[in-house]
Length: 172
Image (cartoon, rainbow, N blue to C red; front, side, top):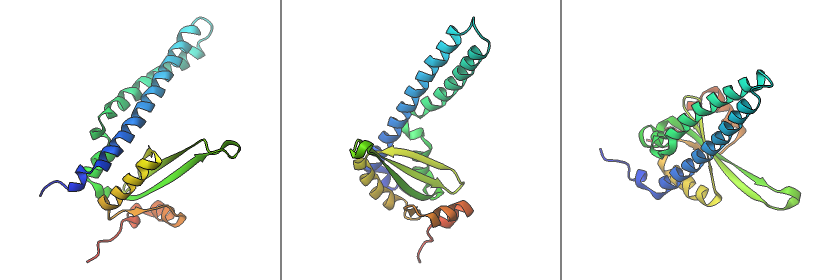
């Protein structure tokens, strides 16, 4: 049995780039947290016991998460990509949320977040641009014919009761 030709589709590369972009943003944020935690530890060491302790705790937690996140710099190792390639049936529901920033009525920016709901009750999210969303959305509809697409309150309730209720049945 050969590899699914959809797994060579350019949209998968776009999705990998979006995951990589999010990973880099997380690493940057963690790096800033390491700097702040280090500064808090060093500059408050003589004045207090509480602030250096908080700084050390923040430092340890930041380094731990940085180590975990750095492993995702190879998009192939990301859980979403692995699921799409090896267990696509585990993804039962896909929907998106679009957020527009409109201060004083002026369109500043918009962001689209894709939600991948899994049969084990877990979820994976990834932020994509408007252009990326259109390409990835069409691709996912073809790659995941068993999954339900789009958000509704009913679907959210069904997912909460039992995630597999959102898996489409195969037609005979």
